Structure formats: C-alpha cells, structure tokens
Image (cartoon, rainbow, N blue to C red; front, side):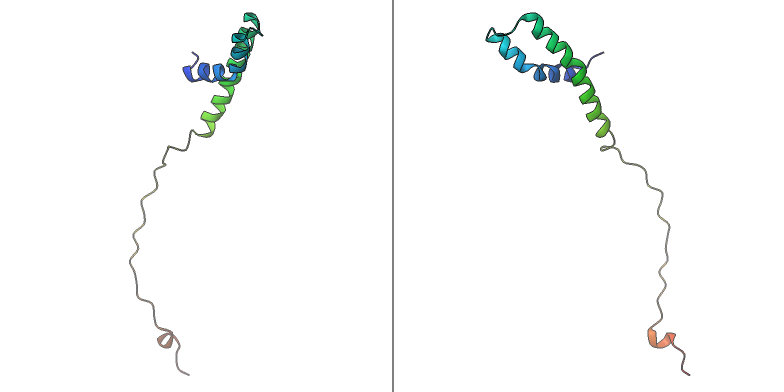
Length: 83
C-alpha cells in the first residue's frame, strides 16, 4: 500500500510538469510518466527519512542506579604520618 505522504511528495516533485501541462507545453502521457517515475523516487526518499529519524523518539530503559554511601575523606594533615 502506498502511503498518502508518498503520493503528495510525488505530486510535489512532478509539480513543474503539471505547470507545463497547464500552460499546454506538455502532453498528458508525458505528465503521467513523470508522475509515475516520481512515485518510487518519493517512496525511497521518504523511507530513508523515516529510517534516519526512527530512533529519535525512543528512550531506552536505563539500569537502576547503584546505591552509594558517602564516606568522609581524611584531611591531608591526618593522612600523613609524622616521622
């Protein structure tokens, strides 16, 4: 099944051909051929865009944090032993 976004993007790609058809510079068969070529191109481009942006909305579950109990550090003068 072709997505509606693919058809709209294909119509956008072939818009210059539609404009030339309106101005009577292009034949109907040439217009349809350009649209039919634009459909797989649009499908590939949108599939690539979906593939690139697929992971942006997902959040992975992070492992639970480990509990840490703070211990006081020794002062430098207490750590050194007198000679």
